[in-house]
Image 1 (cartoon, protein in one colour):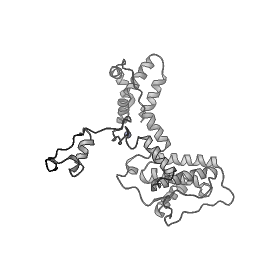
Image 2 (cartoon, helix red, strand yellow):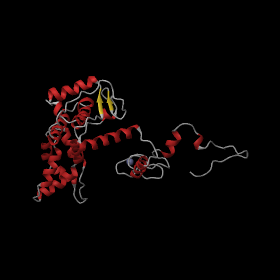
Image 3 (tube, helix red, strand yellow):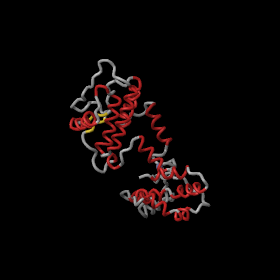
Image 4 (cartoon, rainbow, N blue to C red):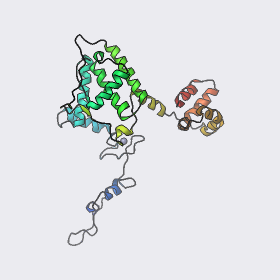
Length: 291
Ligand SMILES: [Zn+2]
């Protein structure tokens, strides 16, 4: 790799050096998969390219992010629009922690969408906007964007409404003279306020990824933590032995069969424990298998 390209007596290259070849093909040949300089991120399960001078990719190198943040805090660089918006949202939530009735917004809907949002909240869920704090309202709008506009996920929306009501109960009644103010029909001038004009385009991350809230994320994490079995256990034999029972639990549901396949190690262990009289692991495994 480090050999210098050969030159003739006039100093011209005998063969074209790699960096003179046009296009990105040679970059991929060297740094891409299978190339001599190819290095992947050392974070488990990540196949991203490791950054120069680091063994992690741009997403998983925490030093890199700390450096970038330190630069931002020290004023060595201006925040990117995304960072400015995130900072604004953090500041808003800090202010709301002191006064939840302060009229701030971090998200704005186009009038047509605002109408649909109001319909969902006021008429279908029976919310009285005059008694709802701006912080609750604002969070509800973000939830509506995820679970009603970009995805049609009624359970997630119901969870959001339930959380909003719980939060509102905690905050209590509005201060004297508080009245709901309808958002302006014109888009806000502050670029840090997210403007939602329409549903996210198909293929965008907002549409591709499922709508996640705190509860769904916890559930996914619970399901994806696979407990490894010790090597002395013959997982296949135990699963085969109990297959009629497992198949009965699945009752023909492919999602459950997939989960059995994914957690077979854990299931085998739970079955052994169950035989020894400890039913806890088996009950935990059964809870995981629920479709
Ligand atoms: Zn990575």
